Structure formats: C-alpha cells, structure tokens
Image (cartoon, rainbow, N blue to C red):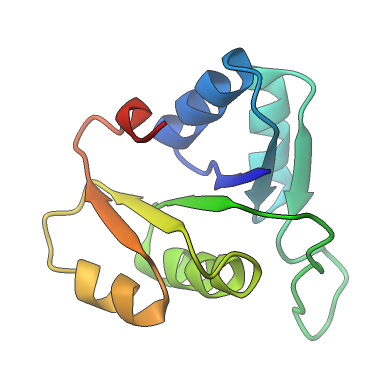
Amino acid sequence: MLVSTGQSSAGMEFVRLLLKRGMGVIVLVHNAEEEHQLTELIGKISVYRLYPSGSADKMPIASEWAVKHAFVFERNLPECCQDIQLCHSWCPQRLYVVTSSLNPVHLVYRGLGASYVIHSRSGDISFVL
C-alpha cells in the first residue's frame, strides 16, 4: 500500500497517477480544508487526517496499513518534518521526500529518516514508479 501526503498540486497529480495505474493509495492530510480539496479534485479516495481535530495532545493516527512506500510532498519545512517522522515510523525502509526547494534541506530530511530526497521543480515524479 502506498501512502502519499498530497498537500501540494504535485502531490495530488501523483495520487491521480497512482489511481490510474490501479495502485492502492491512502492520502494523509493535516486539516479539513486539505481533505475537502483532495476529495473535490480527485473524487472518492481514502483520506485520513494526520492529527484528528479534537485531540488535545496532537497524537497522530495509528497506522493500520501495511506500507511499502511513503511519499511526502514538501509544502513547508515544519509540516514536512512532522510528516517524515510519522511516515518513517510506519515505513522505515522506503520514504521519499519531494521538494522544489533549492535550499540544502536534504540533510535535514535524511536525518529525520527519509530514504530519498527528490528535487523537482515541476513536481512530476512519475519516473519513480
């Protein structure tokens, strides 16, 4: 099962590609607005909030899935770091971070558990499939 955090347009396009190829995908989002945007653009899909509203201690959802690969699309540094740490706990062997940043953030991401950091201005990472 593939896990993708689709907070960016590149992430959404990647999820569409996975669905077209018939791959199982779960999309993790941070808030209700992202959830609504994804379901509106992509349609019926499994979407889960990383930190469900109403949880005072901000504990992430528990992983109930067998995860082979995780893809984190960077939107901003703090959220990306949270996503990496959470996905790394579910999928320590293959964690890809996709960034359009030219800053040397790859060392931070690798230190948090990312297996690969992909720099892409367009966000098109279909080649990894």
